[in-house]
Image 1 (cartoon, helix red, strand yellow):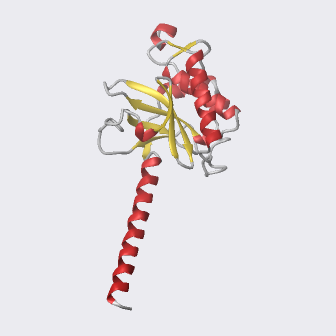
Image 2 (image 1 turned 60 degrees about the horizontal axis):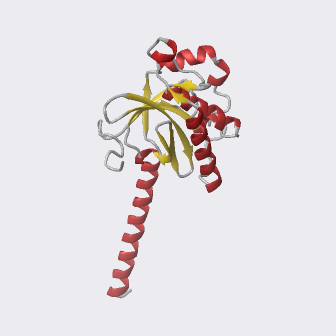
Image 3 (image 1 turned 90 degrees about the horizontal axis):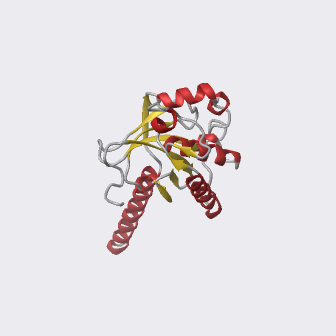
Length: 206
């Protein structure tokens, strides 16, 4: 093999390696990185006392670990549910509604952020999405205030359904610091979201 051929081969191998590394980095970024088990929100524990059937492991991704494909039709479903629930529910704090700081429940006409997320979880599951792909998630806003959203696992990464944003966006394109979310195999196990310290995810991409 001549010098020119060896150089061309070396360049091709470098390009292939770079492309592979870039693809791997994209996969890591697209899927929310989670680590060890962490504390379960008291709101979820109390919710499960009232809605035991919605907290069982049946329907979780342990039966099918492959997330749903992020087709245009599926993303349209997510957007439709997000828009409808956001329009139907008036945001009201738990203190105003129930006189307590924290209560997770299904909303009817009024609710807090976690109630929006629970309604979307229920409606998407009723539409055929496995519970293992519908994960309650705790985040922090830029001002440090706690907030809850719904994470939807797909073949193209994790998407966020949020009562404060009509857009269904990849988790790493939001302005939140992600704290913890449910395990995809057991809704009663919560996992810490790992990242670069406490730097807000996507803070520069508002």
